[in-house]
Image 1 (cartoon, rainbow over the protein chains, first blue to last red):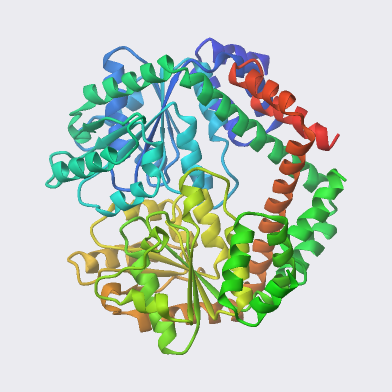
Image 2: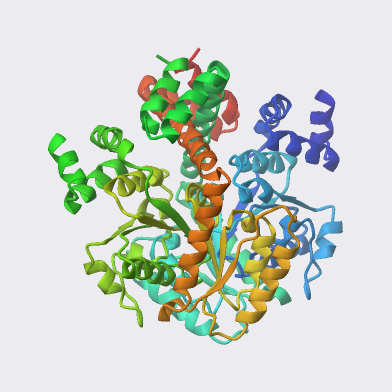
Amino acid sequence: MEDIVERFLAGNRRALARVISRIENETPEGREYLRQLYPHSGRAHTIGVTGSAGAGKSTLTGALAAEYRRHGKTVGIVAVDPSSPFTQGAILGDRIRMQDLALDEGVFVRSMAGRGALGGLAPSINDVVAAVDAFGFDYIIIETVGAGQDEVEIAGTAMTTVLVNNPGTGDDIQAMKAGILEIADVLVVNKADHPGADTLASQLQGLLNLSPKDMRRPPIVKTVSTRGEGMQELAAAIAEHREYLDEHGLLQQQREKNARHQVLSAARAILLQRIQAATPDEQLDGLVQRVASRDLDPHTAAEELANVVSG
Amino acid sequence: MEDIVERFLAGNRRALARVISRIENETPEGREYLRQLYPHSGRAHTIGVTGSAGAGKSTLTGALAAEYRRHGKTVGIVAVDPSSPFTQGAILGDRIRMQDLALDEGVFVRSMAGRGALGGLAPSINDVVAAVDAFGFDYIIIETVGAGQDEVEIAGTAMTTVLVNNPGTGDDIQAMKAGILEIADVLVVNKADHPGADTLASQLQGLLNLSPKDMRRPPIVKTVSTRGEGMQELAAAIAEHREYLDEHGLLQQQREKNARHQVLSAARAILLQRIQAATPDEQLDGLVQRVASRDLDPHTAAEELANVVSG
């Protein structure tokens, strides 16, 4: 065990992969790795790339990683979107040579989509990001589909959230009105060579103009990520947002917010495990059946369970 | 309080709206309403309508509700998608007269998108559905965006999940490969008058043909929901799925699965409240700051918190 941590800290990628697997499977070993490695995390700039399916998030993620690599920076990619090519076990791309990234020692790609897509337990994405961070990557890009509670929370853990839009899906604007804009630090109009890109950019600008004057307005960056166009501008916009966070003391505030959320979620998970460990199967099954047959409501049943570990 | 429950059970819609507000705000009053009303729930057929933004879920939901109304059935609609027109406080539609639905006493529409979109606490959607169910609607349609952990779970609570696809967004196929198909009981190719609808239908059929022979293969229904086309077929496919569930004893199994999930989630929430009530602010703040500064990992901090209510 010590050996794995040592090899991890010496930069061994197999050790990183193993640590992540243990963390993902929520084994005691994984917890112990995390405990030992956590003090080494917190140095990477974490970037959330979010947007609906088909917006081109994966290609953009690859192109942005390539841009950072050109400047000698290392990049970890954590893909949470089940529709991401990264999560299909293959890194493919037509024009951009994403396979180059796969062979690049300065890039690490990890997919976490499997469990979410099948409706399993919430994956420990923050813990995985912490491990990738502790390994020493300069940037970590977290690719998420950007809808649903969990996705919003994941985006919330990134220091800079990039919202990717593409021309032709007018419904995105509706979604953004409903609050998604509030999480975006940088707006991307991807596929900027398609008709409608300028219209989309103006619509977004129009939305931004409606936001309160004292709020920071996210810049709009046009990209054609299949050709790597606009990546310098995107990297600059991300760097600028990082500076903004630093200058306003917001980074520390965000770190505390995320820490609070993670600690409370983890405490909840621990208590749930204790409930399950302390409750005989027959008792839990009995309660569940009473709820299923509408004899009892879920909250009253839950009170009974909660009292098993905390009276 | 008794009065509200009585009025609710007598079919008073204001009482229904009030009960839902209390449930949404998670007040003790809301819990008590739910406790009293829960035994009256479990009679509606719940239908999840899911699919990416722009797939036409809202229009389809409206058209399907209109189809049920033509047969004298009552319909509750719970919209969870932040991009849904239902959740924008307006029920609008070009060709289908959705305003008719708004004025129809046999239809009840409730939006729950606000909190999710802003990254707040998980809304108590199951509890709201239980209340609408207890009120006596024949069908409850739950409209969700269909991506992200919560959305998948919400879809899981519906008896029949309808996955809406539309031609022209090839990425949906990718997403489905990754597991979304596993949650779909009925597949809809919406906007079937658009070019590419037949191609999409064949692609979906091709995917279905790859699934194990002993698995039920969801039917594919073509619709043009703006004109109400295909709604009879969709209602028939939903009814057929309901029969399938009944015949194979799967309805009871699903009810138990949902009940288990709801009871455990509620127990977790109760324990979290107890932690927060039992922990002095300074202690929680101190732990959070140590995690934020990477002095302590979130799980170790969480253990400490969990021990406050359960040693």
